[in-house]
Image 1: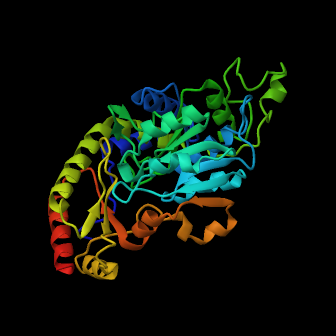
Image 2: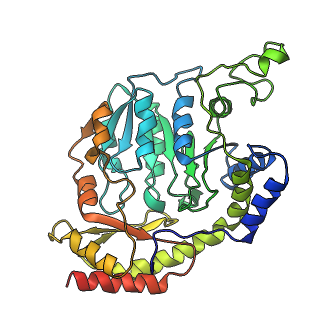
Length: 389
């Protein structure tokens, strides 16, 4: 395809890292995972990192950990504020743990949650807020952090689409009580499959370690704040304290992650150069609403929403893009309210979510990669300009 949605970012360094693991005798998580966790946390200036097998699993154990805190744990029936646009597994763990969703519309220009509606979303049952930075563009994380602090809410930051973005000189993924990342093939760094949770809270860190691996105590450090050792090493090796999972990563993924992390700054700079070109090509054209950058985007992709006030037919865009051999897809997972899964959710909507519906019905994205896309972006501009003369 002339212009792919995603492209591989591995070089020989990543392949050599896999070979070194294969030449050893440890394939499940071990030293390489442990070192990647430490290096990734240090890159973000956070105390603790817990690697898992996907960003979805990162969201799962992040949510779960808040239910097992000694003080003020979340409880089934509590409300959590979420944006109307995100990936499905932002929401699913919340439903699976019995939380009620308070769904808030997004800004059409940024595609991130409309923080002007946060106070209207707050009820006496609200206990948490989930921030999602859509497709590399930082949400108003500083505003949400302040809102959470003022109202005593837990703050989960789903940063799976926005690694290496920045807001006010601070990396995204550093604002939440828990912050999650994804290392899927198309994401900013790729470890085959993989994800990470970052936190500065030692109790949450120990809960995450246990939840990641069966709910047992084996991986917990001495003097853990979440349990007391019984003194029987035979029993302690298989002692279960939480209803956990097996979402451990492979050692190969940890080894690859270390190589990818070293390359991430250069990857991000290349993505930002492409973003600058995209912005120059499409700025000021009322037919196309492009994502307004908040802070410094790490530009997962390029979103285009056909101006809903002009009545443009999105099918014309899709036909033209297919003929030009340009890949495209729905923005993230679209508006969650448009999906059949909502019949399983206990939820309410703040206002109308009209912007999320507009993005769902009139929007799409094309890919960004960590190398020069000048020919692809110039063709994209010409194709869409012709389609909507």
